[in-house]
Image 1 (cartoon, rainbow, N blue to C red):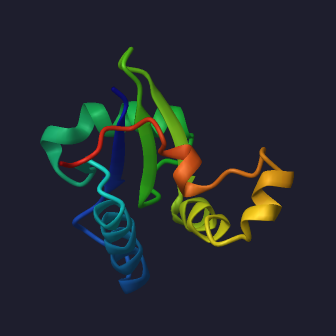
Image 2 (image 1 turned 90 degrees about the vertical axis):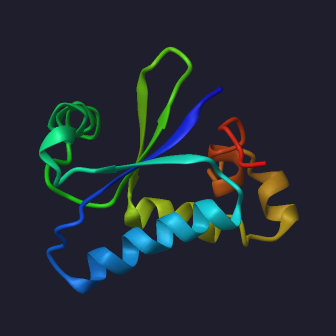
Length: 117
């Protein structure tokens, strides 16, 4: 099963980054998404951090959200603003979402990822 991945940094550039990282974590937890959190600031995470930067093409920007597929490949979902947009789209009226099935939402984007029991 696919896995949600949060690339974050314990060495935050500002309070906004720290708040955004916590918001991603709490959104995953509230939706019972089983996710992996990777601290890009730690030396032991350098290889995976660089792999994820290669996928996102967003070096040094945090937080970043990915989905790790069963084939071990990563899909870049976005930086915090894109993640927040997915959450906001979940709040659209049902008739709008039904009429526009291509609108990405949090629920549709993370529909096939591992959940917490």
